Length: 488
Ligand SMILES: Nc1ncnc2c1ncn2[C@@H]1O[C@H](COP(=O)(O)OP(=O)(O)O)[C@@H](O)[C@H]1O
Ligand SMILES: [Mg+2]
Image (tube, rainbow, N blue to C red):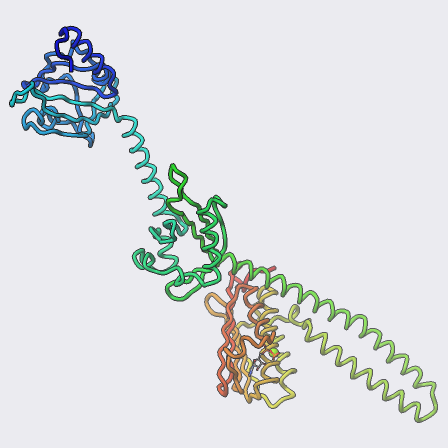
């Protein structure tokens, strides 16, 4: 290229070319001594060309590190390896410990060079590229990925990563535990296996909106089907991760089991319904007793006075009959008021109230009653006592109405941590599954009431084999006296 040019001019041109490069260039002779370097190499290596000239590659002027941060033995330095083997090396990452303690990271490529037409190697050219910023960025990316992975693995909430086409790429241990599957099993499940069709359609449409950028993140409730068939109500938060070109690369989902919360909400709702119903019953019972009861009493007294002044025998007979009707009406109303809200429940407690109620209600029929209680005079929170009474009341009414039973048994027991109420009849029984959709409110009301006070209700029944109702209530111990449930 520079034929017949003054050597000084040629050298100046070469220097101009060398110094314009973004890479550092160091030229070694065959013995490993530095012959030349460009300005960029001077800056990278922290020495002037003059200081470097004649320095041997084995010299200890640079403290070099391998990519792993450990000191780099001289024999492994790329310039040295190229000198010894004649090999071309590219992109060897080495660290250069700077005087200020920092490290400059270089990507070094080395290649042998030879004089024109000479078969022997004249030395090695090393090209140095400063990759410090790139390496630090990669390290901080790795660190943040590690932090994300730790949060992902230890999160007390289910987490999943999906590809943009909806494939499950990764799930965390919490989600595996929540659903009862191993990670490998979860990854092979189809979306239809863990989400009911209606929820799946809605979720897929939200995925689409996220991927198209119409939403930046979404939060919705859905049902999740677990390995054992159990259905959980979960809240799922989904967000999309995009690359530098704004293309979606993955979706990150957070899945929180809110079944407990839903149950608590539904128990609270049942509680308020039951409370409203009880308040209304109490009001009607008082009105029947105070308003209608008093008016009937006044009417009876008035008729009695009239009876005294009337001499006509047929009129007397009519007035006697009217008084008799009023007396039966008063009894009837007293009975209704009593059923609406038995006053002895507050005064005498559960055992005495249940015994009186069962005797009065079932005495009329042919049913043999058995009532056993080992709770004695123990008092429980008013809502539990009322719940036990209402469950027994509904069961006794059902027994009279539907069972044609010969025996009706009620058992009240104080177990170590609960109050248990068991009611059995030996009557017609019924098909529980078939009855579920019938819309009858008695059994539903029983369940709601028991749930509202934090208890559990199990109904066992079979056609011709009778019916058994088991209600269990939690007991809170209070100053040595067992109190079932929380007083309210
Ligand atoms: N002890 C029982 N013996 C036989 N059948 C019963 C008994 N309890 C309930 N059933 C059946 O279950 C149905 C629903 O009961 P329930 O919810 O109390 O409604 P209702 O008493 O108003 O019909 C009844 O109609 C009856 O067929
Ligand atoms: Mg009923």
